[in-house]
Amino acid sequence: MDPRRNFQPGRYDSRDTFTPGSFGPPDFGESDEAELVSVSWNQDYSCFAAGTSHGFHIYNCEPFKETFRRELKDGGFKIVEMLFRSNILALVGGGPNSQYPSNKVLIWDDHQSRCISEFTFRSEIRAVKLRRDRIVVVLEHKIYVYNFMDLRLLHQIENLANPRGLCCLSHHMNTSVLACPGIRRGEVRVEHFGLNMVQIINAHDSNLACMTMTLDGLLLATASTKGTLIRIFNTMDGTRLQEVRRGVDRADIYSIALSPNVQWLAVSSDKGTVHIFSLRVRVIGEDAYSTEHETSSNSLQPLVSPASGANPGSSLSFLRGVLPKYFSSEWSFSQFHVPEVTQYFAAFGAQNTIAIIGMDGSFYRCNFDPVNGGEMTQLEHFHFLKPDCPR
Image (tube, rainbow, N blue to C red; front, side):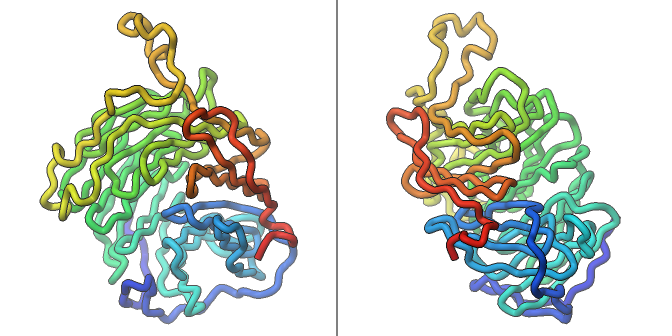
């Protein structure tokens, strides 16, 4: 089904602004105390957005402070997707008594204080992803990809039922990569749009629960609904590069994050622990390729280094050829414990730090020892919806 679109074509420039259209703004104004509906990181994890029952708030991570908020009289948003640190946001209604429908995306220019475009669908929107040249709208069974400059529909992707709205994008200008569930259980479809190539990865036997990519889109990390293993793949040829173990009991994985230098991986789950794993992937720098059209799978292939990472492994490794994979997968290098009563989402900060945001309104910043691992040290803790939150 094609979405019905209402928009004024505009111009998108290097300042991350979009020439405003003709739509009126949501009714921002004073409201009662807000209830948290959603939290989400921006693309480089330097900020996060909190969708509430009465609008949204934007927070900077280092130093931690609220940068701005918009209060609504008529309800809030279940999706607030930022475009890096720009004034452009994608908003989808949701939460208690929201008068904004869950099947409509509003592209909001906060600098102009107006809605510059909207997309309406026949079913509930599960996620929206932005990059500087694309808008991606995720429904349960279909994904739509639009050109940001003129809002033209570029691609439609069919997939298996995707109630979690799983989808990730690359954000380097010379790679255009999208990963999403495929049409079979446990399968990931990777679209290399610039190369006009599709890679299908059989990642897990169970349904997918969580996924993330590096900013260049060359590495993919996935977890299934079983929640015991996290796997890292080369998106060019589908090779499995590494496998790490969160635990032996089934768990619901809330977030996976890769550090900018691709040395570390962080995982949060309903077991109340944020785990950090050491990666053994060698990454080739951007200078290894000039444009996506000139690359080959060989020049972009990340390799697993021969030296073992810092994750504890099995002392029975000499029997690895006979024992099941349980003994050969690697365990976490460092951990931080959070309450099990809510969802937490982790991301990497500067200088061996982790930021963690929770659906209870908590923000943690922790430090991990890159040499010895072990328990992380808590550096900061705020309740970001409280009046005493830094501004």
